[in-house]
Length: 151
Image 1 (cartoon, one colour):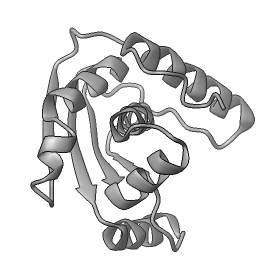
Image 2: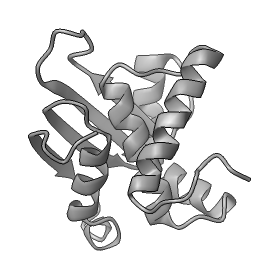
Image 3: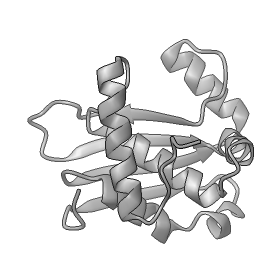
Image 4: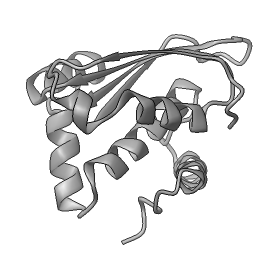
């Protein structure tokens, strides 16, 4: 996790009002906090319909999810991490309300989560989940964000 890693970041906001709610400067800060290597990333915000379609087509799950990561360089030898991170604004906002968190705090968590996935981290097993959650907690703490897993 270093501020020194080179980052090429593209952000796609389908709704221009999102630019005022979730600032590009914050997205960049959250991404850089979770990077272990240089990266070329796209963060795209989508609605529930597009999120559901992507989740169904690529994961076989017929519902909109909060974050999807399409990593293009998951092998250890890649010098640059390349990925698309898809955030579903409808799900993100609903979860933030349900969890009594700000949209900013929840977005920070999901961005960090997505960036870790882009770098090969996963949570398919309990051991992987524990490792990934601990990393998320540590990274978010450096950003001044609370532990997203505490009640």
